[in-house]
Image (cartoon, rainbow, N blue to C red; front, side, top):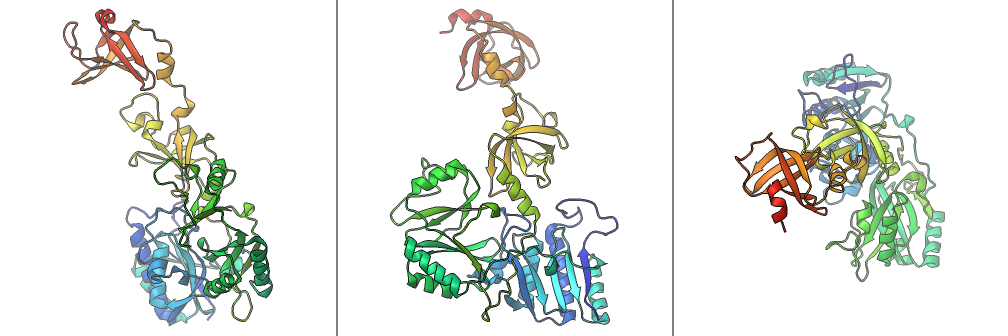
Length: 502
């Protein structure tokens, strides 16, 4: 029987809606979808008689997202490989039960992604649209049993010609083997420079760092490298922390911030953001101290120029590792963030109702879905009672970039930054003692707020002394007593108060 490929999905293929990230429908949460797909996969594994599964092209992050906000739950790589997530590497084998646990975490988009296979007769390829591609060559009877089990879970099984994640279709990163020639060159660099930094990428975007300062250190690190790891050699870290901070503040290109503590350990690398270059906070992102070092490693492939690069071959000297470099939704978002600068002007469409403190915005970019975030204080200079007045779903907006948050893959936006400040424009024209018409907008225990211009309010302190107290909406006449520009406050009084205010 030839290998047959099926796409499993909770959506009917004929009527499947068009969407970019294929969020589960109203009847199925992502956890439920992942459970159904992994349970269906368990049926195929059972019918195929697969006792062990092989990991292929693993990614710690970067398939669905680079965001660090995911739960990374206990069933992800860290749960399947407790205490040593480096077991999550290309070519690693694990029991079928552990492989299915890992698959469920992948389908829940907890960060990781990989392919799973059992020889040439069976494979599982998670997709980015809440789907799973299964390749099966186990006979018609077992195939029918597995398909029946999948359909009983409420899934659709669509026969397809080929998995779009077939390794034969991959774009791959080709590097020379980390052989004797490579390690001789490493030793030479250590002798010439005193020390170098070794980047060990055991799975895509899963890294360990090693500082190599002696021949003994090189030998010791070689013994600990993960099979099929991708290696890159960079200039040594520096103890000149202020120089690193200055480079972060310059922000010419996105970089990874790599730090080494005094005890020789490496905290997790982070994408360097401008605020990390500051030293005036109680807990600086790049702390100083004896034995502490730091450095920046380029993030984008186009800017990476290591001193040496290679990939670990298998024991027989053959390079079998496959490093998939196909574009993903995550790499598209990262490229979008890398191309933005604070102060840039962008356009987009409000995509959601209020989410905690703002609304999500789909930026006008192929990878801009929900990347923008517009907080309530940045929506308008004028007071509003409902979001429908300023940012309802579907409204087109033009905004300025306030900040770029790499950890959340989000761009902070401001609409009002592109609009004149009505308060300042009005305040600049005011003079002490000027009499103005206004409208009562709020009554509070300590006074009355009066709107004297669109987006401009002032406060009449204390009880109303001129006739009966007004109600909200009443027209009144007031006098300017004081303007506090730093605090954006206008003190008002009744016309008779002007000569008494000191």
